[in-house]
Length: 204
Image 1 (cartoon, rainbow, N blue to C red):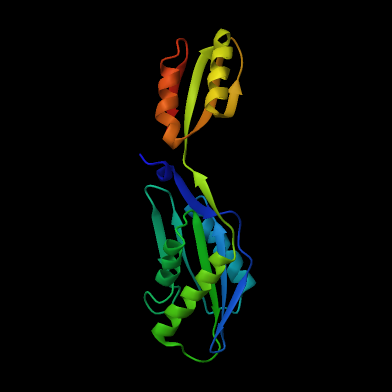
Image 2: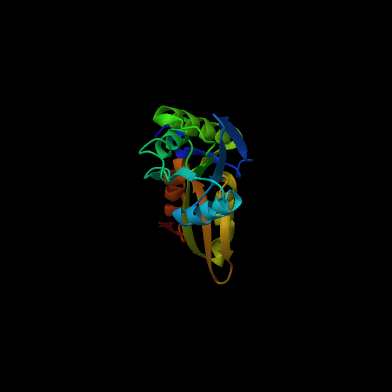
């Protein structure tokens, strides 16, 4: 596995509102970080309240890293003239766990399908340009189970391998949840597996 394969790009926080005008129509673009599909509907409802005169609020989202899911919605615009151009920008910026929405307030002049595609693409592009794109690593989580007497041994490995501890319970029998970069997961798993008295289980 190459070192780059356990990283992905997403956006740090919601973008500032951008405004793009085309033949008196106004296109307001936004980008939001999301973790689940359930977050999409409340965001869109908030945008509908904000832009109550908008004729269309078109959007696209993408979730996941290896098994990606996505959706593109034209919200009443001609087929594939809005949602897909927005989604194409998500692909172009190579980001995931993101929702991009563009609200249109009609200005009285029809743009035609080509004009719409261009306008929604520009709105999405400007929204993504207007936010901070960050790189994250894919993390695997493991549960360690061991006796208190083995604590020093476990902590020494954690320090050597620079492993993040997510939670721990210290008693006669201890449990610890750790987070490991995916590229290092097999190595760390083997180290603990070969460490007498420590049971390691991957958390799916």
